[in-house]
Length: 174
Image (cartoon, rainbow, N blue to C red; front, side, top):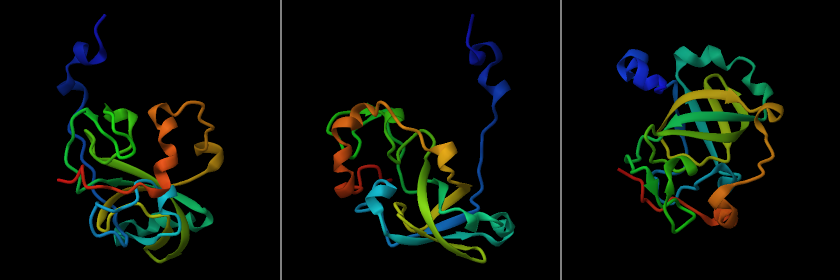
């Protein structure tokens, strides 16, 4: 028995997927190099999310959440091979076993603290994105839905202690 892709043909099952940004993320980081690599490494660093006017109505009730999930496009990253050296290790790992910006689809995800909303502008903290990052979506962070106690964290087990001091070193920039 073949896979779904073999039976149908990729062209029959999937067209090209395109997303249109709904806003832009503003941060103190003007280039990738030196940017924190995850929100816990960026604690207290503030920024804003500017949601474009045509999407502002979708912000109704977002202020009731302490944290939000930002889904965005890594607009400055180059496409990488499927095995790369991540920021916190000297060994190569598969791109799907890491959270770096160079990926087959350059999609990023960060859980940030929501400090307030004024019309279409969200004030956030724990910003680990470069200024000007295109925003694709916002979702509320709900601990009962999103928080899982991980039993295994793979190669990061020996490296996760490096997070507070790890910064982007420019290796994935176009």
